[in-house]
Length: 199
Image (tube, rainbow, N blue to C red; front, top):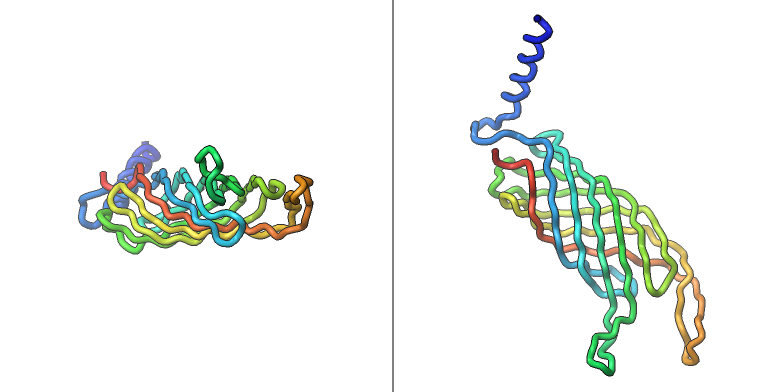
């Protein structure tokens, strides 16, 4: 019986400690966001493209959360117009990443919450112009959450690798050369938050 009473007491204290001082909301540990945006290449042979991300998170406190970002980005270089009127793509690459992340929120006001964050993990890259590869990378980001909407800018740093590039000469013969991969990109994204926030 004593154990049962102690269990109820601990649960009650946990619920009370989760309440904010203003008594208007309850701190929820599990949340996440889905976002879509523009990916701008930093160096390399591509210009830009689109990015999509899903990121479940766990809040260790009201101002700090840890998450797992799963993101895909497709970037291309556009080289003019084909004879049939379609856009010519000179190069394209797809980037898939899995990163452990952390965000720090500068306020507990859920109407407007600016944040800064960072993360690290693995990037996998498939490209038209050189061999597919994987490498370690990191992100640095800033942004704000406005109620259930999220806006942010992320810099994706991806470690370069020595790779074999594929090019063709005037006769159509394939030429193999050694290049240093340049896969970093900036993501400018907007999304929707689920979980957390107001009760």
